[in-house]
Image (tube, rainbow, N blue to C red; front, top):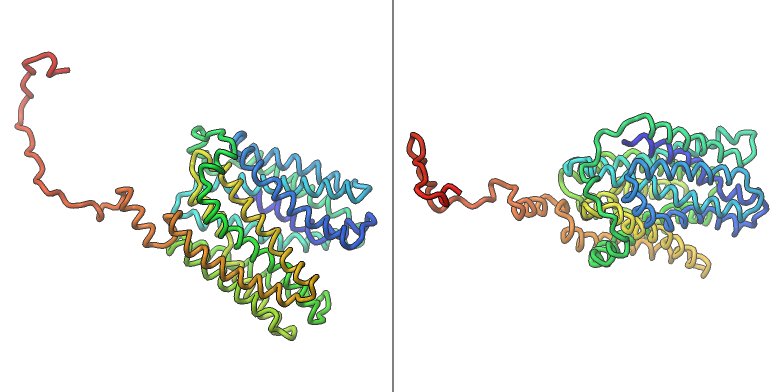
Length: 423
């Protein structure tokens, strides 16, 4: 279940650190090269809603195969690009294909994994992306030693090809039980029918996405503000990434056993508090400690957005719903760093970082307010209440108020005296 995503995300992880350098190699300025990197996330936002529609129409595995094929074409175009705009277009479509891969696997896991294992499964899915983002740059560094920067696209293409081979040769553990019951409902209808969820819990998801994405922006910016060298910044980033990678599975266990809020709220509180504390650091040691705490806060929240989406998604239109759900999260991921960048351009990087720390606290409050309303797995209490409402808890059934009827007498039953009685 997880191997295709791990291989694919390893290729994307190798790609991300050198996209801007690839743009520079084609003659782009610093600002334009940064835009090329940002277009990977823009493509993912543009691909979220179509990814849900594609997965609903083709099925999860076929959608992943189609997306992998498109990615192979776009990566080849990236490697052969001769202008910055050719590269930019290919990178945008690559981001959209990435959205299809992740959403299709999330939809599949939501259908085939029992609810009691759902958080662990989706946390592991999120962890595969983290492992790929952690391992990919090291593979990329080995490939680029003594080679031109565009060779990184051939490594990503190789990972994509291996992903296709795995999808074609390794069978999934089960066929989705609800595959025949899916409805090809237009996304706008799903958005209209579930607008209350998107306007409340979806807003909380947007805040969570913005805080988590900002972490990757504020760390290098503040390290540069402190005068740290690029090599020192890379080491700090790597240490934080290692802490992030090591904590995804225990958090899934806690969510399955105690409820989603026991991870979602602490994750946002830790991320918000550590981002607010970042401007108070003045040296490499304090910066490293705060970065590790950031990695811990982000790591324990691995898979929380996918798990909450799986909890509230309607079975018949699950893929379309999850497409809009991911659009909320990815929009926050794109918007959070923009707040910090705007504050930095106005001359106060610390103010932007403090503001995103406050957003983290607000995200924790929004989750605390809206998750119990929509998810029966928010806490143990909401789980038990949902079982009682559904009549699935035998202890909650009221005792009988009248004795059961006596058993019928032994022997053959008398024949009916009227044909209508027999009918």
